[in-house]
Length: 320
Ligand SMILES: C[S@@+](CC[C@H](N)C(=O)[O-])C[C@H]1O[C@@H](n2cnc3c(N)ncnc32)[C@H](O)[C@@H]1O
Image 1 (spheres, helix red, strand yellow):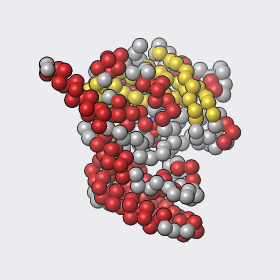
Image 2: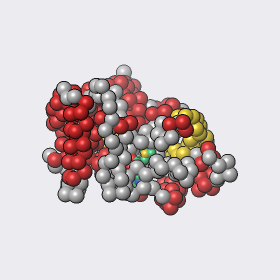
Image 3: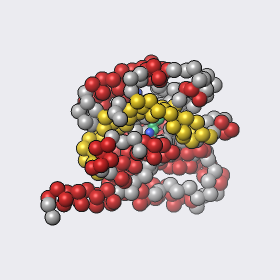
Image 4: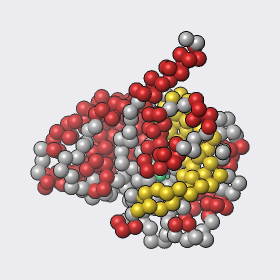
C-alpha cells in the first residue's frame, strides 16, 4: 500500500473512533442546522475529509465542532467563547476528565435518591454556591478548583428549567429549578468522548477578535454569533452579562472581511431579520459581495412557546 493510501486509512479510523456530542444544552445550539452547514463545506474538505486547521470564535455548546470531529479528520482546532463559565467546563474535561466524572457521579448518586422537595433545596444551594464563587474564582489559571466548578455547571445545566445557561446582568446564573424524573447528570461515555475530541484543541475564554492570531490562509472558520434580536420584545437576546450589540455585529462583519482577505474559508450563521420585517436588510448590506443564503431551521429557544417553530436562518460564506 502506498503511504498516501495508508494515511487516508489512518484518518478514517480516527474519524470513526470519535462519537462526541455537546456536553451542555446551549442557547442557540446548532444541531438543527448541521446538515445545511455540512452541505456547504469547502469542496476540498468534502473531497479529502481532512481539515488542517479549524477555528470557531463563538463555540457555545460546540454542535458543529463535535459534528466535524465525528465526520472529518480535524488536525488542529482553536475554540473561543467570551463566556468564562463555559470555558471552565471545556478545560476541566480536557485536563481532568476522570476527576470531573468522579465529582458528577457523587452529585448524581445523591440527587437521584432525593425527594422532589429535597432536590429543589439542593439545586438552589448549588446555584447559590456557584454564583458566590464568581467574585473570587481564578478564571485565568487552570487549577483543581475548576473541576468542581465544571461539575456544578453541568449539574445546573442538566437539572435547571429548560436546560439553559442564562446569566443576569451581574453575571449570576439565574435559571430556576426544573422538574425531571431522572435527569442524566453524569454521561460518562460522552464526557470521555468529548475529552478525546478535545485533543489537539486549544480553548480560549476571549472575545472573537482574538482568534485573528490563529487564522491563516486556508484555515476553516465557522462563526455563530449571538442572534440579533428578532424583534423589540424578544427578551432572549443576550447569552452572557455582556450581550452582543448591533455594533458587535458590525465589528464581526469587519472581522469577516479582514479574515477573507487573509485567505481563510469562512462560513457564518445568523438569525434572519427578514422573518420579522421583509425590508430589514441589515445583514444583506453588511455582507454584500458574499454568498448569502436563507435556510429553514427550527428555533427552540423562544420566550413565547407559540412562536417556536420553523423560521429562516442566514448562512453566509466567502467561497462557492
Ligand atoms: C449562538 S451561540 C453559539 C452556539 C453554538 N454554535 C452551539 O452550537 O452551541 C453564541 C456564543 O457566542 C458567545 N459570545 C458572545 N459574545 C461573544 C464575543 N464577543 N466573543 C466571543 N464569544 C461571544 C456566547 O457566550 C455564546 O456561547
